[in-house]
Amino acid sequence: RINQYMNALSLARWAVKRCPPKWETPLLLKNDWTLVPPLCSLVLSTTGEPPVQPTTVRACHDKQGLHVRFDCVDTHIWGTFTNRTDPLYDEEVVELFIAPTKSQSEEPPKEYFEIEVSPNNVLWDARVKNPTGNRADGLEGDTTWNCPGVLWDTLREDEKNHWSAALFIPWGSICSEKSDPFPSTFHANFYRIDRPESEPAEFSAACPTLKDPADFHVPNRFGILELLDE
Image (tube, rainbow, N blue to C red; front, side):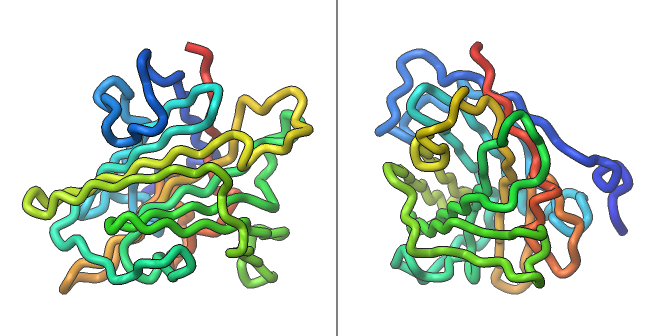
């Protein structure tokens, strides 16, 4: 059953504030994230209903880039992949899809960046071309793209059924040097794949794509990140 409220939601908007004072990019998870209010909680991608294992997303920005944190409840944290080119999405992972808006247009992007982190602190990144917004029409993922300057970190707390991941995405890695003015809004969606030991997998999203089986590559369901000066 599709949650009627989420089905009616055409476009989510999130206000992203500046990072708190004394924020240090290299510290990632060691920064005081309690000073950053939650941006959203993920819901089931297929229906918009609450997941069994919740995920909270926080984000802030500075002149260098975007800082994102995922906090995941997880009763069975696991992963076997160790390489950047391994298909992390086949196990457990959190994901960010993002692209700058163009010329004040908020039409769904035809190209965007996909960045994933596993609980074992492995990164996967790609540049995606999705010209029609339908993966069946020829979606292409360029996994030779390595996000320049990206930083990431994870913290596993298996005894607490919890893991966290933090990402730093430099603006220069996802925005053209010719961007003038610099974009203040970005298309984005946040995702998580959780694969419990003896239960069906959960696919969660900030903006549910409402596709069954789950499909994250639905850019017309991306929300909008608005960068605030405050």
